[in-house]
Length: 574
Image 1: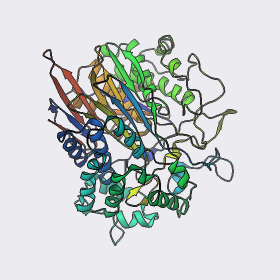
Image 2 (image 1 turned 60 degrees about the horizontal axis):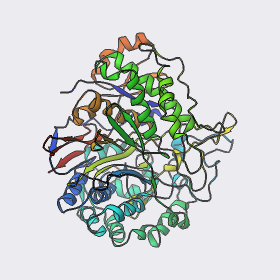
Image 3 (image 1 turned 90 degrees about the horizontal axis):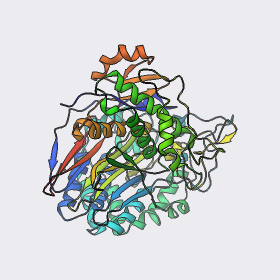
Image 4 (image 1 turned 120 degrees about the vertical axis):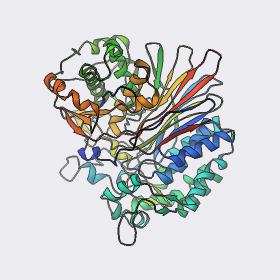
């Protein structure tokens, strides 16, 4: 068993209710393969992805099948009503593409969208449910773009596992039952009440066979033509549901949906020891922050620290505080604000930032820096994401590698069910306050803009430019820490990807350390307290799913899959 080590994500302006989650699952056994592999948050989705690979599909083909099944079986986390980021390594061409399927704000919004009558930001929990928080969904067109460029099987074939499962039904898991029963907004909307609850108004019990013929019909239409989602009856029904929502009606229109455009971005990459770490670029803040954390730790020799030691925890906490400070100030949608990507990853800048950390002590303040090329006219404000997201990793027989993180934002999105799928509430990832200290917020609401995200799909390459790890996680702003901890576990401590995923999590919130409930890190409380932290115990649920790729001297390879025991996912392959 791997050494149990706590690493962190930083939380700011994030509701404490977000710590609540379903009971932790049992540890996963190691999974290996030599040809192809899929790791997802649900066994049905993993099976669908593996089936597509066995039929000669590419990693992108498998990703499409996985996403459609997750729309059905993990509706609290992702689906066709939301958005996603995908990182794809093309083994034949040797290229890396970052696909941006993040939702966009409607044309009729402005930066007062989430202000109350008094001009002050509204409570996020009040703003989430209903139509006002819905952005134009992006995942279907993004996947269609990727399939056109990298698919091998016919588009329609990739929908068949999800269509069959929606018609025949799937068994409600204990985790899904728990999340339904603890959500306070689902019953406010007639369609979600009818779908997720029985005639007595009770959450569907675990073990219930749940069918979704409406989703099966929707998927059949999209299988024939992905544009069926963005024009015609489906788009009209989405717009109508948003604009007539019984709570917080919104402005998302058929025109907003029809005009949605997925984008291809340049991934952010930086060297780390003998590897090259690549992740998602803005409008996700995740890639930059993950890379900043590990680069700061490189200068602090985290590899030489004992995994379970308070010293190692201290280094990770302080490096993460600095990365999150930069994230809060400088990051936003690059199509609307000038994001100093190169400056934030500049070697001299990170060396100077690392020098702010004195091992064994707690910084009184962890300020944002002034990276080279940074503008001075704006500030960002933490959007405060809720961790209702999913991540999956795929490697196909040709070596094509996918890291994809997909989300509807909050658990069950905005709780509006349309044609069998839930809509997102991604607009609440924008800064609610349009100004900060007299300067406009980089992440303020603007028409057509993509909200800041923490999603961090990541692929690591070796010195020969071969992928050696694909990883990612849900978790709102904690995603960054969850991914960074796994990178350190695999790259610095030579752990298996499964053992690195199982390393305990922690969070830093309002000046306090929250240690994962029941973890070995609790033994470090006295030392951490003496350093100046105020550690407390809390459930911190990641959803890390990854694949490590190890190459033999004979040119062969071993795929090693990992699935987070805190959720219900699996890894499988051949």
